[in-house]
Figure 1 (cartoon, rainbow, N blue to C red):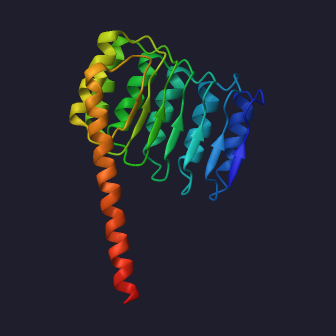
Figure 2 (tube, rainbow, N blue to C red; figure 1 turned 180 degrees about the horizontal axis):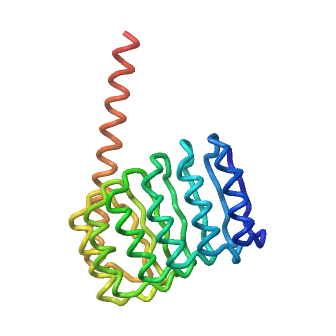
Length: 212
């Protein structure tokens, strides 16, 4: 089941009411609440806390709202309840460095999210140690978008350097050129292609065995 509530001018009370109803729909797979502008920390947290408990939710898009640091902290606290979530979009939500730090701490232990978007969130240099630690620790996420924040040239280089310890991320989207550090992403992509090819070889071998 997919539900789209993009661009509906929903407010916090609307989001919390919606969250109460969604908690009774375990078949929900994708939920889009992008660009409602009036969903703040309470509404965003209510939605996340409700849907992260659902067994099949794969995509949650809360981009371009006003969740803020307080909402991000509650979302981070609930994040690892979900074992099915694959894509989380929190871009353009005024999360700030404190909200980012809370999310990074949760993502260090997350084993389900494949794509995380936190672009345009006023994230500053004080969040970089948490970001680099998450990049080093997470072994599941393959796409990470942190463009258009308040990060400096050196901050982005630190993030790219952290990829040397990560063999999974194949797309790190920034508004900064990685230069020679692109080799880390290229290595990860090659590793992914090798794993994919190996998996296909195993599947084909088993099919041949079953067809004999």
